[in-house]
Image 1 (cartoon, helix red, strand yellow):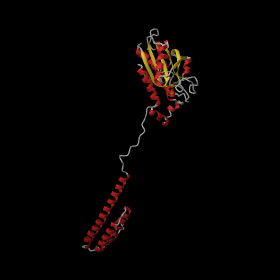
Image 2: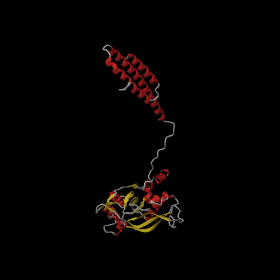
Image 3: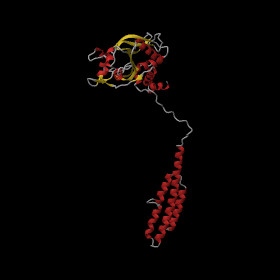
Length: 343
């Protein structure tokens, strides 16, 4: 039996030296060391040995097993090292290669235009005032010379939450709140923010949009001051060649009131399809603050006067960039928005 074990050792080690893949190695492990392997078969015959022979054969059997297992472990480690090396070689990163450019964010065109408008008026000495988007009927209408049942309320179809609470339809309530807080002192503010009206979404309308309104109150404020301010604004927004004209209009909170047109940004006032051959584009509304509004704000209309104006940021953006549909601002189309990252 000892000779058989030694012969098995030589045979196994010779076969193991020829192994060149993990599967072949595993097959030989089963062949020689498995439950039905060659070594196990030989050792089963130990039952017929004498008491003196069993320890000797058992020791030889253990030596044969250890020798075979040693070569198997060595081969297995070699295969594992080779596999790891190949994997690392395949995963090697060339750190000298240029990196992939990641897309970067940019200011939304509406925010960009709003910031430009704010910069113009801050440069003219205006402060910025803000107020709540959920407003009371008093500040949104009554304090602006629009008492309940006033027919002019129909000009703005509103989102009411309760009988006296609504989503503000303009940022004019901020003007009233500012007047009440100033206790009769001069005012020079702009009021930016979102406003809400029950409107069907189309190319020129949205149920939510952005407004910037302005208010100046003090002694001897005149209509000519208003016109000069707005001319300065449009020339900074659209170029020094831009001109304005004021057309009579009606707003309950100003008297007199006017609509303001700017020379067409496309044809320069010569007439084109964009301006319907008139050479002018409507841009905002304005007027002298109504005496009743001054009183509601805590001012004496005999001592002070004021002017106010209001514009839609979307309207300014449409004109400034030559965009024909307001919905482009809200649909998050990266093809549209990415254009403004370069401006």
